Length: 137
Image (tube, rainbow, N blue to C red; front, side, top):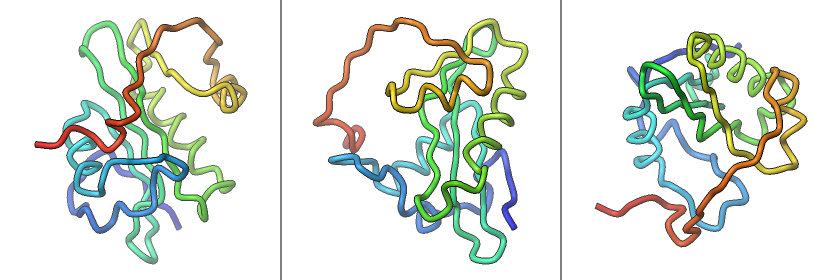
């Protein structure tokens, strides 16, 4: 059974392995825990049997008008079970009073987000791929 939680209480970096599949470089589990702890909103999917985090979504917001969802991840062996859909539904519900809810995603996953009422739009982005692992402090 999967439990959904909106905080990182009792979540350790060791529980955050296996994400960012296909990234050339990616945040370490320790950096991922930092990212989640510093996101205004986060929802984690935890497998009750193993205690492993199987998926997560986070949002950054000004708390008044806008929110941006930078990450939605589900570990490959848990994909296809509706976990990602449930994470998006729960996050959109949390953000329902915001005017702007933005997600920048690859074209290959746009149809997934359209199921939740999101619309294609144009955006400008800058990606420093050599920084995919996050800022080193």
